[in-house]
Length: 216
Length: 343
Image (cartoon, rainbow over all chains, first blue to last red; front, top):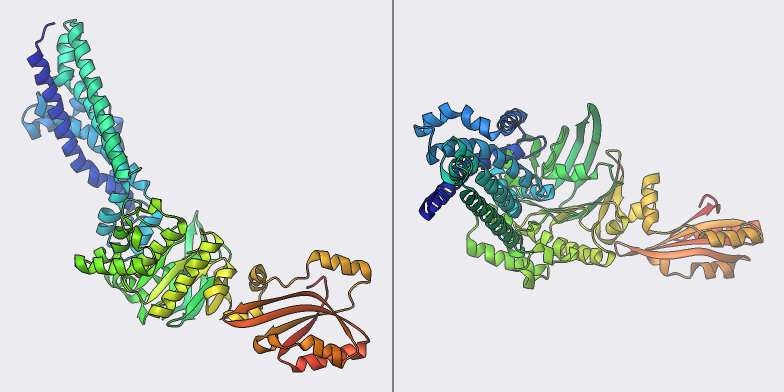
């Protein structure tokens, strides 16, 4: 094996950092966008088709660009924000561009599942749009939102490994530079195994949490 | 309390304009239980939703407690809504929250102090008979219990108006009856005006004071429950009344009689109030030389007044029958000749 244990742990930490930070920023961007996608649509709380169509199209554009191309295409923006286009911090920028719109879609799906009757009841009580979102929509969709975030997190684990290909660091980087380019099958197997365990763990955690919220 | 003036609501659907409400004029008085009945699609849902602005009318006026809603700002309408409770067919409770939190929701929105909310919620749960369910979740309750929670929630802000949107349509007959009794109790104890929309005439009969029949976005008949039930004018109203007050000669009996000799003189006699307690027919039989054949009879209570309905065949000489009818007409009953086919 061409790498030692420390190197693998270092890569693992980098992956976790990339996923954690990009998840955080994507959520900050995706959550409001997802909510807007729901409440501005026709017949909803704050119907506004102009806002809806703009957000909808932008999300579709980002969602249709393959991640590997997106990563390269936004290098100027990455440089602008982080100062460099190489390394773990730099990988977070394209990951956010990738996962933000994705999370917005997942949130949109979850919120649309909420029984319209509940929203009607809220309106009948004289709740403001803000109150309806915070006290009705989100709590009612929470269990489904957790599952959505689980999917997004797992998506980010995969994408972060790809970010390794352009010098993003992490497990993906390790797998490509040692496992692939230098034919070290052991490194390849170990990184893949770690990724499999991570994904399994995340999915189980998400399922348990969602179930707990749903109480069933 | 609630007044609709030439209320219209037009929906745009696929380029076509559909009028859900087509000029409604209706006045609901303070403290009464008013029922609006109609088939699905008649516009009753739109009508009740105009009271708390869940639907904005296209034109006309909605006046609630003296406020013309058209003239109010969104914020002012929110204030008016706090004075209107609403109960839904499918309860519309938050499944993610406990019974306590559901009932507390309108008070939380109004930003009341926590201890005040606690006191009020326990009062309400006590009132609807579910004090022990405070920490349960809606999906652990039966339909009737869910509706009781829905009612408790609707009453949380101590509204003066309660809107019931098909509140019992998803419940079995026994539960329906208990929910209706609860609504009656609310009306009596808190003097809350209740507007009910339904397609079930039994709901109207059981608790309403007045009723309006809606069809194609228009009120086609309106009056006290007693008047509409005892003498419905429009075919739709007659249809609804017949769903709860059977006044048709059963087919099997019709057949038997027609086989024998064909009916001669068949009359429908309606008894109202005290007259329902008099032995009218036997008096007539003694006074005149005729016989009776009772084909059908029932008695219903409408708003506490007994209402009897008899279909009787008179047998005897024509002159005697005429005199008997004259005699009956002088009493407080109505008599009308019917033929078996038309009845």
